Figure 1 (cartoon, rainbow, N blue to C red):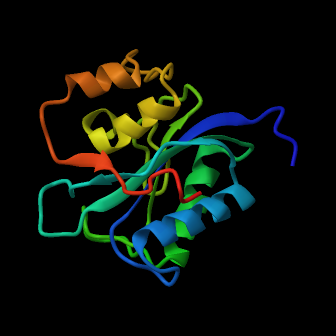
Figure 2: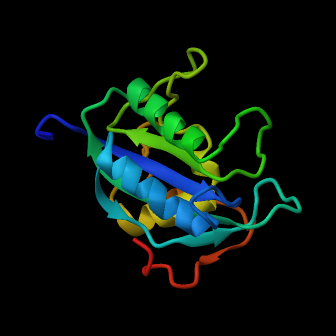
Length: 178
């Protein structure tokens, strides 16, 4: 597939429940393969992080990462493809902030800035991106020069603005699983 006219994208990955692929880390690695074989050419992946659930709850900690890539899909089609992958792993939408076997968030699509327009339409950049250390830390690891197109701030700047919050640490063997 030619990528000369591709759009740069940032995608957040997370999981804290097992899927038919196994434990959360195994699910995330399997999801990366499906993303790479499908709608996105992956150019970089952050280290894996473990993060406390947001908001605080008795759920298991999440495994999170961010990937940078390119796609020929429109933002809405890419979001639909990511949702299909989530469904393949057993993700059921309904309860906000529920534990999940796979969470794929379209964080940014080039410099696009869009407002909510209806169900299934990509809101870009992801509206909670500036509030989440578990997204900003791995994003800053792989794209230190990326700037939020609406806030005009780099990931490191946004991360520095966050108040102390939920726990976030490098996952054991963070770079081992590809």
